[in-house]
Image 1 (cartoon, helix red, strand yellow):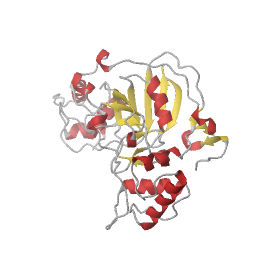
Image 2 (tube, helix red, strand yellow):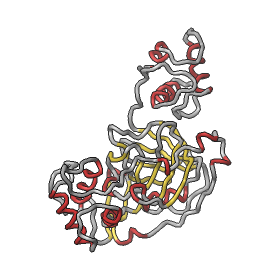
Image 3 (cartoon, helix red, strand yellow):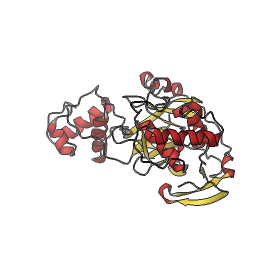
Image 4 (spheres, rainbow, N blue to C red):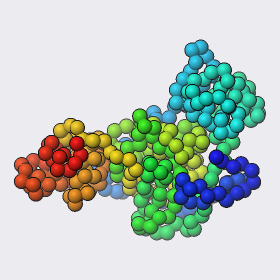
Length: 332
């Protein structure tokens, strides 16, 4: 529950940190901008083209309104949750834009001084977002020099920034729904862009996940933070992602953890990509084999690690994933 009156310091145990909520939440940290580009880093050219926001389709911003049959979907559920948290909607979270939902929208629009048409478009979505106070993470002081890394724990709904291995800051996030999970693995930020608005909020940090478009971004649905709500991306409060954007350069490693990766059920070989490749890479690394990053790409280093395992166990060392390899690693 968010408290809106005054300026209160609240312990939010789920986030493992203290936050300042209220009028002073508009304060911004003074942070240096780190402008490193992927072109200056050892990232393959094809990967540097991934994570482009203009190709993303993980956030729906369709206009919602009362109709017959009723409009339905996860975006309606998110609308109902937001209105409920504001104390305006008292019905069930049905995912259907029924008459009570329309009446709640009109009541909110009247309260916010908007056109009372019952239609939820960009202006109403943004007004809903503006009505939610943003918790401000306590200041961590000047940003120290050193290598930056991000860890996203999808189980705890937390994003943690490390600098030279020491925790610098942590933020609450929203992650993917069960049917559209946030990918597990070790990826890099390869795209940064600003002010797309709508469901993507004010900042975008795109990841080089080899399937789909995934990134860390802001939101116009701040009540979803701390839940499973997205189509796989990592949502942050706009003010938080703006802080992150300033201190994190392109090329930064992002480790996403907190749930089991997919089991391996297919024959894997060099050239394959997928969540099951991450499963194989993590299992090899746990047994001490060097796969580099668990980045979902079955490349030379992963093949070499498989060959080494095969040699160690007296198997034919072809570097490909066979059932006996999977059994040895316990990934079937």
